Length: 431
Image (cartoon, rainbow, N blue to C red):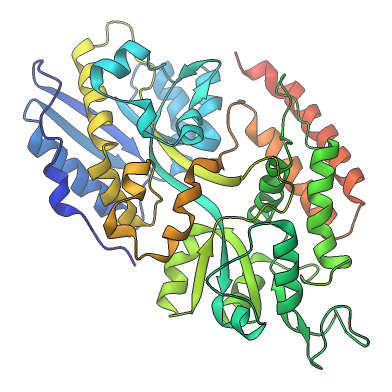
């Protein structure tokens, strides 16, 4: 459920840095769902507090923007400000469709990079330059059923953080329909009544594998931006996840996100790693659940979870573009990403983009606040322009490993080979 909070804060930061002549800015974004009225209210509040800047927002599906933006830039008809998501931004940058935000410009506009979570801000960086400022953020989290944990003799207020804690919790929560647990004589892993953790085979499921690889010090690409998700660190991390099915019998084989989502809602699975966007659904179902940061399943090199984000960017403009409009656009970006506005934006289900918002007392009672202490450890797949050429083979590799179609190392090797084949072709399209 989306509720507008912090409305009174919309008039804060009203003192404008832009003092030039009145300008009209076009603003293109993809917030077309329940988040649209929140964005429109923010635009109205900005216009009301900035008499010399008028922003006209246009909402359209993200995919439409991805199709139109290159031709808009080529024809000199770019919007003044465009929201671009983390999986698209580097590609547009590499194609020359987005202009860099220089340190001098950021400073003049009052945009302080240090306000934001480091990995989140850097999502829009490419080759040492900044190209966007984060306005929205989502992440992979671990939902868990407090009633099942309590029934299994676990502390529902202390979700697992380490691999050992996680595995013990998953085993304690797993029971077949005859009442037997993993390791007990007669246990039937094909006839489960409750199970410890949800795994599944789509792109959302593969983001748990991505997080585990990062936790073990691995990466999807190497320093040359070639696919590299078949390293020993990556294989070890993914192998543990696959073993949750075949070795430890605490996850169902060959399952789907929809099936696991239904099972969690029905109280059949204890831990459901997925996107934080399901939080509203579980709230509406009045479940007794908690939200925790993804445990260190892959390794202990670092805390890490996948995250998605949207960034305010300035597209490349035609020659002779009005410098006043660019300065006004930077003022809009600064205002829109201030803590007060970001606090309001969290009412859409987005996560805080900065620590000052995460610590706001109005968010403390929300279940999602259980991950706020780790928001600086959320990493988007970004920084290289051929994300699609890497992610599609990676998702396929995860599916092959999870479903047991291939051994883990072979699945990853085959995925890397396919990804690098696609990257070779993609390099021709990028600068």
